[in-house]
Amino acid sequence: MTDKQMNKVWRLARTPTQGWPQAEDFRWSEEPLPEPGSNQMLTRTIYLSLDPYQWGRRRQGVEVPGVVCHGRTVCQVLRSRLKGFDEGDLVFNTNGWQSHGLTGEDISVFGYMFPRKLDPSQAPISTAIGVMGMLGLTAYSGLIVQCQPRPGETVVVSAASGGVGQVVAQLGRIYGCRVVAIAGSEEKVRFLNELGVDAAVSHRSDNFAADLAAACPDGCDVYFENVGGQVFDAVLPLLNQHGRISLCGLVSQYGNQDGLDPRDQWRKKGEQVFTRQQVQVHDLFVGNYVADYQETFLDEVGEYVRSGRLTYREDLRPGLEQAPEVFAQMLKGDNFGKTLIGVSQDPTQSG
Ligand SMILES: NC(=O)c1ccc[n+]([C@@H]2O[C@H](COP(=O)([O-])OP(=O)(O)OC[C@H]3O[C@@H](n4cnc5c(N)ncnc54)[C@H](OP(=O)(O)O)[C@@H]3O)[C@@H](O)[C@H]2O)c1
Image 1 (cartoon, rainbow, N blue to C red):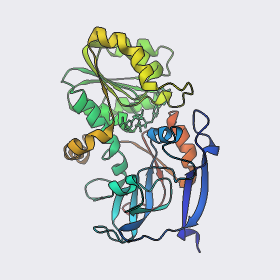
Image 2: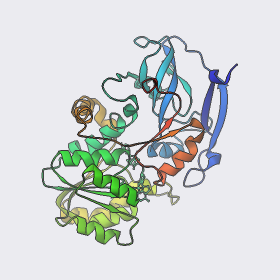
Image 3: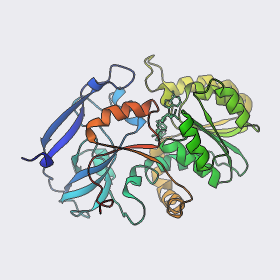
Image 4: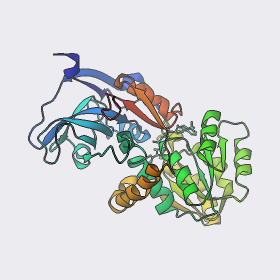
């Protein structure tokens, strides 16, 4: 059997024992390709999405040792016994951290629920796991649906150069807001300025809190929270009366080992200010917005992307072998844009 015909797989080796990912948490294997049963198809993975929430699944035991690490993917159909899908089709599905996978009946809820054909003439196929996928919908649901920003209001967004954050920052500008973006490095700050935000500040600066306050002379009306920790500490005193927050994620806390729920801790820290300033806090779980907003989002944001009004930066790392290392780097900020692994050749990019 040639190398090409083997399935390369990352499985979870153990329920993580350390706060942040370790090499020992993952196990690599090469296995024969599976054969699709009835109502199933075999696809080869082209792009694999690496997302902070995958770490939560592993730490909380949702993903158990021995299973293929979960992850959303862009794939090409190799063999299909699934109605509506043919060999060669490009699809969004959930192969996880492996080079090939089965999609269809009896695979898994994640695998079966969401296979969707992709049309490369509408948008580059990688965007199905980025700006035109869950990340874009997260940004849209949190900023537009939950916080309803008004022209002239100040929107602050953390992890602003990342997958979700860069979409939030640009949507804020498109909706006529003053956007203040927070990121880690000077390089990311430069990128955000080029993207057209009104101000960008680095949370690594010694003067971060003062820099942020100076960038928000009229306070903060809407805060899109991706990070928590010290970034949240600096935003709290700037919140205006009737401010709104979309509590999207708290990535700085995902390695905590105190056993406490980061969202509870975050709320406790903010509650006095929230009460005094009558701030509305919206918990965000993107899955709750698919049924009602997916189509609107794809129409509206799709148009911004096609017209070039909304751009996106991907951090594409070739080679499934390096998924655990890139994953750990992403959680610490060593990514620059939406993180994805290039697993095999994208046929729309060849020639
Ligand atoms: N609620 C939902 O349904 C939902 C859906 C998708 C994503 N999310 C959440 O959205 C957030 C962003 O996800 P993403 O996929 O777009 O990831 P991402 O922003 O591309 O990558 C994570 C970023 O977090 C920042 N970061 C890490 N540690 C930090 C720290 N200690 N202080 C400040 N910033 C830190 C880093 O940016 P810097 O270099 O700029 O620090 C890093 O690039 C995450 O919290 C994720 O869990 C939630």
